[in-house]
Image 1 (cartoon, rainbow, N blue to C red):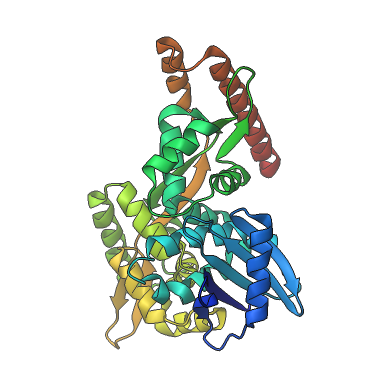
Image 2: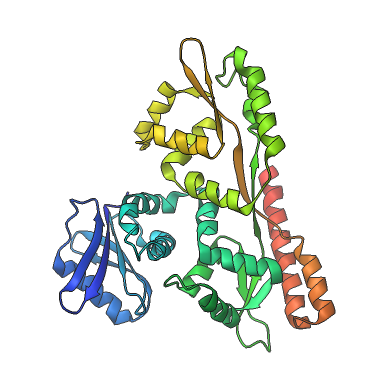
Length: 369
């Protein structure tokens, strides 16, 4: 696990200036900060560098000259700095979005925890962090409408649409490529590379089917079985999927490492508070706070027996995955009809979608075997 996080800026009068650090007792010398500053100045480009300074393994993310900040992650010697690049890029935009009123200061411990888990995120958590990023959502939503756009046009459009702070388009696109959401390729005659949507994100609440099949075996007293079934039915009769609801769950549950640990347990068991307390060994410090967030998001139901024992059961689970964008075929047909995209671009897009479909199908068949 990383050692600590430092947020620094350069001030002509005072040289390097630490704006925030976590944990508070973290010590980093002025000389080391100057070395980090000098290394970024040498490259002259925004983005991440990694360097070893004595016993320190450092990953440092520079946000660029327009709004220069240095987000410095101190690592153990055996940790791979490159594995944290996407996470540093992600939290840089969170910091900028909360920079004007210093709201980011209270977020530093949470951001450090989120960043620490970044290399070990499962697909669900990784997709959550991807979709929570407002720049990523802009790109994905634009591609949902058009399917393909030139990289140069996308850069111009993003700078016009997103005015909340620094973002590195190339780094963002690289992360989306790594996650198999987009593909970048070239077509002869086009002024720049093309960005294609190859997988979309699908998100929705879903009933806790495994728990419903055998609630007693999963820990629910028999007297509450009917009540549990009714509670879930009542919830889904009123439930209407929305992007707003999805983003709220992603932000407050899936992307929060501590609350996600609670959710993982509740996906397989109906438990008492005593069982939940065991999650402290996994780093869940605020059990009550986590349960409150799940309650506020209508994800749990609480039963209480005559002795005052409380049983916590999942009311609604959440599902996130990549899906093949079949709907894009209709968009391609429409674009061909109205001549909004060149024939060469549309043919290339069909080839890209076909290749992606075949590879996805092959992986699925291998997994089934």
